[in-house]
Length: 282
Image 1 (cartoon, rainbow, N blue to C red):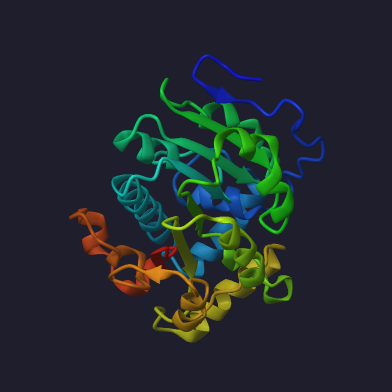
Image 2 (spheres, rainbow, N blue to C red):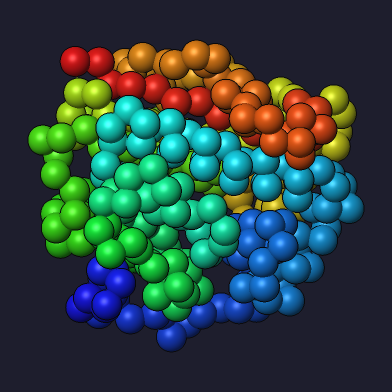
């Protein structure tokens, strides 16, 4: 169904009754790092353990959010008017539709996430401009067939025209055994020429203390949240077949900075993640 804002509410995807608020979830931990309030005691406890080891995870998360905004506005400047944002997370300032529609109010966005808490906040997330459209799909990144063929996607996304595909701070939660690169290739394959991929990924390459980074991974694993940081070379492989734009795969603070003082104050080791943007060749 559709509300007055031009947003679609997936009425056939009711929030899960098994919310499991006693189990940490990566999206809710990320919400806590961003200063949000849509998290629970289990999330805060797990996040606090990570912060004890690596306090910069919080400013790094905020830097990643700013990277998303810059990259989306860049894509909008290229003429992109439709976006598929997988792993969107809990509503917070600077959502994809806010960044895109600040440049082009007619932009259309399909958000995808698999956390029931995100679904319960979808109405807040989906406050589109009157000219634009947004929809929310309750699905997992690995279920590419469902995401690409869903009615929500078919209604908003025209795959004969360029699309922006976003997997921001997502694939480090997909273990190697689930073949994240192979799954990503399924999405890349259906994107038409001149589409844009916006990507960021946690890494240990930027962290000075390897013991510290390993302790962070253990803290996530101990909370039941798998975390697989990857090297710059591994991150670069995710862009295979597409043209990486300058400045390439860099710390998220260094991707086309816009003078934000918080980004300027962060060291690469504090950013903790690589980011990059690529275009599918014609």
